[in-house]
Length: 117
Image (tube, rainbow, N blue to C red; front, top):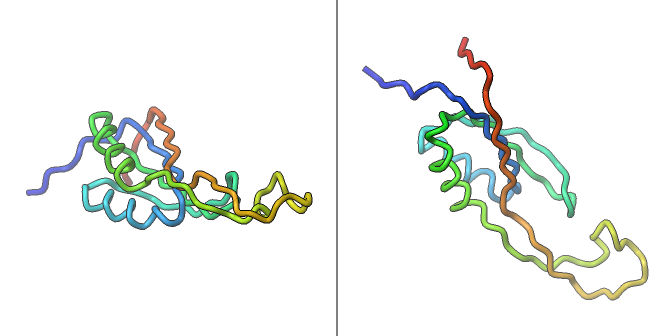
C-alpha cells in the first residue's frame, strides 16, 4: 500500500537559469515533488531560463526552498560589454563587465482548487 502525499495548497513558480534547471528538477523528483518544466527566456542578459511549476502542501514549502537554495546559487560572471542590453555599441570600453547570474526567483501562490483527473 502506497501512501499518497497530502494535496497541494501552494503553487510554486520557480524561474531558474538553464544551467541549474536539470539538477533542480532531478533533486525535486528524487525528493518526491512533482514538477513541470517550461522553457522561457528573459531577464537582464536575455539568457535562457526555465520556469518550473510545482504544487506542494504548505508544510513542504521550506524543504522545497532548501533544495532550491542548494542548487540555484547566484554567481558572478564576466561578460563582454557589447552583450549588455543597456550599453550596446556606445563606444564604451571593451573590457568584460562582472554581472550576477544564476540564482532563482520563486513565486508562491495559494491554490484555490486542485483536481487530479
